[in-house]
Image (cartoon, rainbow over all chains, first blue to last red; front, side, top):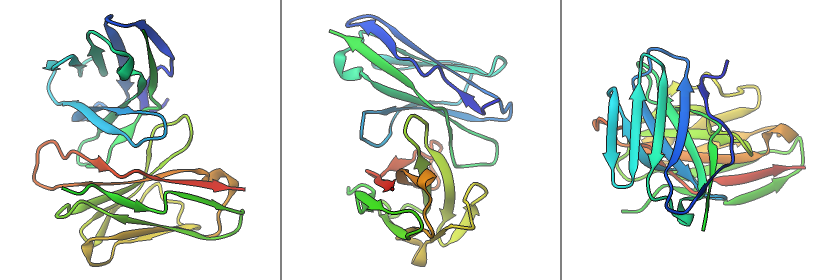
Amino acid sequence: QKEVEQNSGPLSVPEGAIASLNCTYSDRGSQSFFWYRQYSGKSPELIMFIYSNGDKEDGRFTAQLNKASQYVSLLIRDSQPSDSATYLCAVRGAGRRALTFGSGTRLQVQP
Amino acid sequence: EAGVAQSPRYKIIEKRQSVAFWCNPISGHATLYWYQQILGQGPKLLIQFQNNGVVDDSQLPKDRFSAERLKGVDSTLKIQPAKLEDSAVYLCASSLEGLATHEQYFGPGTRLTVT
């Protein structure tokens, strides 16, 4: 079992729709969770982080965390073609600063 | 504020050759990471430095990979000898201690092709 699992996609949504990206992790001791966006040929850039169960909103982005289910999600409202990228879920385990990344979900927003 | 700098951006070598990558982190960032990202996969940690010291090198293939961070600033990652499966993007990242987020800032990466 991979430590951090994501559906590779592609996830295709029409412009203006809500994109829902999901991630599960295996280490119950994980303490913090990150979503990175990576455009083709570029390096990852941080979108959001979340530590506590529940929802965290930042503009068009909402991160959701359910530690009991070991599940993290990212919702993108009003999706734009510029949101087309690979979204990486990353997890920081207890006592560690380095991140464990999933393989990413490729999102395609159709104009 | 200048970001994380890496060089070279691209490198093509033949298998069994050696190669070195350089990283200059954001000024004042005590923690430096080297990640390997193979096409279609997420970044995988190779080594983490805290100032001059190694914090985590559990996934570094030590028979061929080495890294150092002199004076707690710049870092080099070396591969000797390279194998075909080392073809990947090598990402350097840095973070500032003391912040709750411990956000990691990534450099542009070095794309290595081993033929």
